[in-house]
Image 1 (spheres, rainbow, N blue to C red):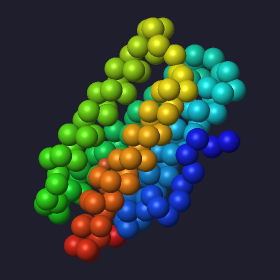
Image 2 (image 1 turned 120 degrees about the vertical axis):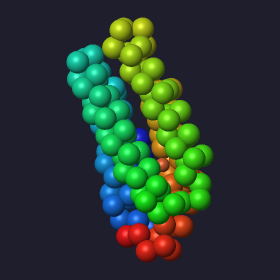
Image 3 (image 1 turned 90 degrees about the vertical axis):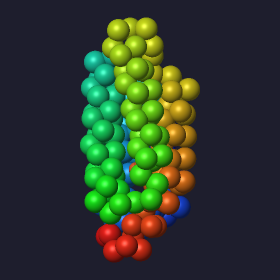
Image 4 (image 1 turned 135 degrees about the vertical axis):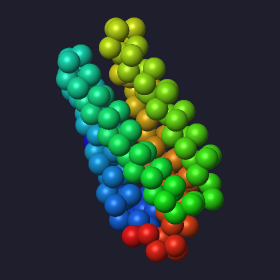
Length: 135
Ligand SMILES: [Fe+2]
Ligand SMILES: [Fe+2]
């Protein structure tokens, strides 16, 4: 079963942002499925890399939009992104060196962080920028 299911509750009002969130959810679900299926380190490492790379790409997209539109809450939003990238980057290093495993706790952390960030921080951004004409 999917760990996260997309619903309109997660919509920010900007179509491209929603599409990228759907892709992030898909990757978290893919990692969760691989963990539950007992896939080996190589497969998990590759899905984890895919997730980290796409996250960095997605944050870059949002940050460019915020900069271009002089969004009021840009600094705090970027800080949330940076901390998440640091946390996940540290975890990825530990996983690759064999000192951490993909666990239910890690998956719950990813799910809670992403849905919480979308519902609060990304929605605030999406609503303000949608009003400013961003689609
Ligand atoms: Fe986002
Ligand atoms: Fe964000």
